[in-house]
Amino acid sequence: MSTVKTVREIGLNILERVSQDGSFSHILINQTMAKHDLKVEDRGLLTELVYGTLQRQMTLDYYIKQFVGKKKLDQWVRILLRMSLYQMVYLSRVPDHAVINEAVTIAKARGHKGISGFVNGVLRQAQREGVPSIDDIEDPIKQLAVRTSHPTWLVRRWIDQYGFETTQAMCESNIQSKQVAVRVQPLRMTRDEAMQSLIEEGIETERSRLSPQGLIVTKGNVLHSQLFPDYLTIQDETSMLVSEMVAPTGEMTVLDACSAPGGKTTHLAEKMNNEGSIYAYDLHHNKIKLVQEKAETLGLTNVAVHTSDSRHLKNLHSDATFDRILLDAPCTGLGVLRSKPDIKYQKSEQNISELADVQAQLLDAVLPLLKQEGHLIYSTCTVDQEENEQQIHALLERHPDLEVDPTFFSDLPVECQTLSGLSSVGLQIFPHDFQADGFFITRLRYRK
Ligand SMILES: C[S@@+](CC[C@H](N)C(=O)[O-])C[C@H]1O[C@@H](n2cnc3c(N)ncnc32)[C@H](O)[C@@H]1O
Image (tube, rainbow, N blue to C red; front, side):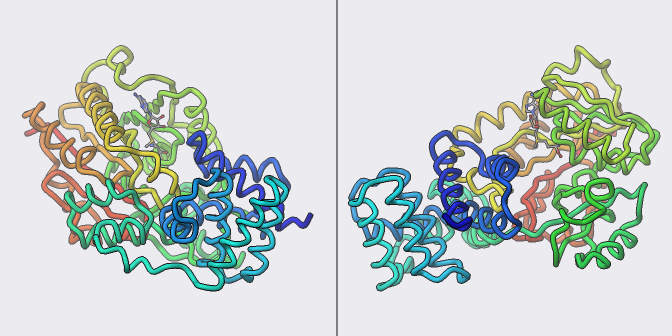
């Protein structure tokens, strides 16, 4: 059996596990790559097949329905059809007949002759007739949902919150492939030195407009660079903006209440010149280890990591201890659908409300630990008003002595100052604003 077929079988297995037990595709892909010794091009194909099929799942199901009607399909057959149609409709590198032959071989090996004949029939019909037009869906909300493969409830919710145009732009950008960005460890190398060194390795980058440490990769695989991981950290530029808005200095004591895997903690530590002190907490012991490892890789010693539920930090720290508190809260992650497409099918409105409750508890718990003249930065990587704007409005109602720091708005990079997601309570960055992750960021302080 050729390696290419093996890659497709591995892809099918990963997609089955994502659909059966809600495993995260990126974790399964990483585990699989570590287990099988895949060639570089096979790694690329596997990633493309898994992410692409997941990313377009609802669109592919719409196509499948036109070919099979109401016939009930075993889940693995449905996934095999999705994966095959994904290649036929969206990828040009493998000819249709090769995709069909491989699907039939897999179906034969996994099922019986009848199933392989069925798979063959559906895919040949798609090859002959092409896939049906989505324009035929009359309801514009359903059409957008199917075209961009987002659950209808989510599209409807976003339209209610942000309007049709913004929702459409967001949904369309969520199915584009993601740009990779890196943060340079500035205590080891300047951004321009890193840029130059990467060019010598054939990797081209552009300077981020959101963080003076950020580079956006425009050509080449930065994971293969000799600068990685001691000089570079993979991090989205909108995520870098969070620590920029914390703006800590080396004289400060900083709390990072939800720190794992440590992207922002280490950014804060670098911005503090490896001075002062950062207390980094996370609920999960196995995750907090990642923060420690990341800090060690980057040579940062001003971080102390601990496992704790940050709703109980008053038992560990006195009131008014911290100059800066970052609450990068657990959230639904609806801003990172480009890199984690499984999220859009797994989350529900109930999840949003449950997480909003936890976020409110975390906010109330860490607030007393803030010094009178300190700043509390609240961020999420989601796009939802209940977790973001409404969360802050409710916080301000519960704590009338608190306000959104007016200098937050003037401190934002100029590129952010005209974004449609700016409001009196913070900044909602949409995925299409910078072709990067969607984030909500705000900065609070006690009224003077
Ligand atoms: C958005 S992630 C943080 C990402 C991190 N700040 C970074 O930049 O790498 C949220 C984190 O909050 C943690 N978490 C969830 N509930 C928590 C709680 N009650 N106390 C502390 N950490 C919690 C999760 O384990 C998760 O690692």
